[in-house]
Image 1 (cartoon, rainbow, N blue to C red):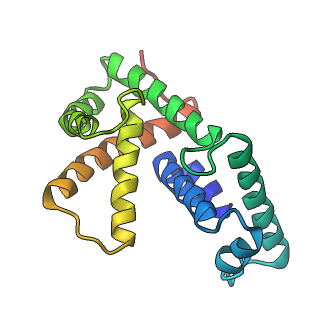
Image 2 (image 1 turned 30 degrees about the vertical axis):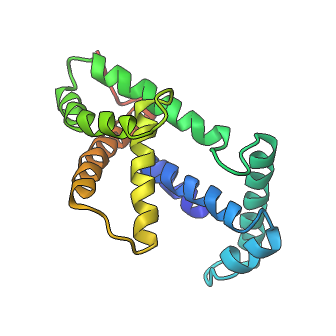
Length: 182
């Protein structure tokens, strides 16, 4: 919860990847709050008992959302889907604005990789940015499993990551009312 609050303010892209990981942690613990307390909450040495209660409540709320929204086996809760929607809206506004040629250049540099990912089986109905996040998340999971990542994949992820980092910066500016697209 505390990590998510910090990330949401500082880097929306990292926040989204973190939240996807939390969803998977909940699934890995079979939605069992006792397991989550033992494996996730209790190991935090710096948390007070009150903070641990708040964190447990946060996990319980996420479990309830996942259950209510039917994403127990796969998929993402609506609050996480909304971030993709907001980012896609901002992405499209940035591409339409003549002021953000640097962003457009980063997008067109990433576009061949996005197209390739979508032809390799990514859901063509989902927003392009979701494809980008899925690629980054997939590589994150491979790294956690200590699996080898090809040089081509590393190159693609670097370009996509650069695009999302730029977008995340503009997202903060937009949220703070500091982004002038006209």
